[in-house]
Image (cartoon, rainbow, N blue to C red; front, side, top):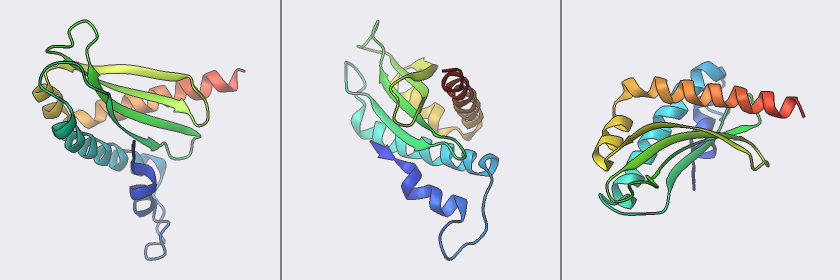
Length: 143
């Protein structure tokens, strides 16, 4: 698992000693989504075949100011694994198994990678992460 939070969030949040400025969640999230999309794209280039089944490729990061973790993943389509891939976003509460998720896109490897490369699409991923994080919080607050 490529956990980008520990590697990148420190510089985003300004918690390192060289940069005392703290970023809000609203400022951090687009940076985390952008870095996550970049890492996922790089890993998918190498690990996702054009055709057939493969192990899910994903990145995960902690969502600032929550106890939730976001996961952006690519996997083969169960109904058409020979040609189709799916890009999905999921959120779960740290240390819990229940995952709330949405499929973002179904297409070829090339279409998925193109989608991740286009920064105009990052808002859709960001909105999904925020909505799923809210659903996760609501679920666990009602228990």
